[in-house]
Image 1 (cartoon, rainbow, N blue to C red):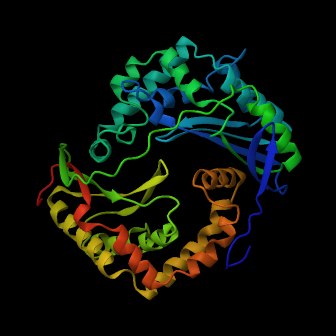
Image 2: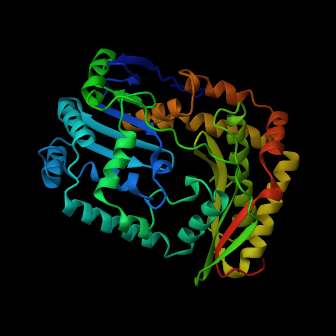
Length: 419
């Protein structure tokens, strides 16, 4: 490791007709695996929102001959981490175990994928928990703003629906519908992506792949529907009785495979990154004291992205804060960043890259994300050089192409003044 970059040798491993990426490291006796299928909540039929997410949560609530308590005990006794989840466009699993416990971890993961119990008492318990979370998400301005923003931006696509479901959809789900959600995803054909990190050799991983996934049915999971164009819906207000308003703002992003993806990361680090040097933070927080924090970035979904951000401010200050936001958006779109801002952003992004690789779980997750985003094996190794090669002129051209001040969509949840 050096100040100029970070080297992470990645091996491509094949076994049982499956392919995985591996970052081998025997410095600590731990193995982490991450895997995913396309789809996720996007494959939930209308009226069954949350089926994939709730089914994923139930996979570790008992499987095979183990009820929920026995399954939890088996994982806890050997310090095994096992998790499944569904987000807007994918269904994923992960495990982490000490090398002596890896056989047990594989057994539990295989049981969870092939023989989940879905016991009535477990379904009822997790359903109540999911409904409670859905209610809580709408109790405050932030949750209300998020629901309204995404449904307005994508009114006719699953991206506009809550991935975890609504109170109504969760209450109506049957165990059969949740099993159907698993059946749509858990396959060992095209679409299954696997990444591994830690104390495991390529030969051991090759043998592990059919052991873990070999019992899954053949075939590919259905493809989620492509993401339509972001709908610039202007400014909408969701009335919420609260002393502050929560504000979400956004616009269309760029494709994950756009050749200027990293240029966009640099521009957005300068405009809206979470640090105190970002323009939005300086203008709205530091100089006017209108919010405790504001940031925005590219939210990846369905191979595309949405440029989305948020903040909260007093109801009486909403109009002023939004005027400053639009002014900074426009200033960056018209003039781009300064050379000094570029130098600082590139130095930060280059220097912070190794922090992504502090443990095997983060490394496996990064390798999986690289596969999903269509990155080559040398993507990480070449990143410092690519960042250093970005000129202010190229950044300005990207800012003019990406940022759309007139199309910036804003959702305000609260009792705003000055709009």
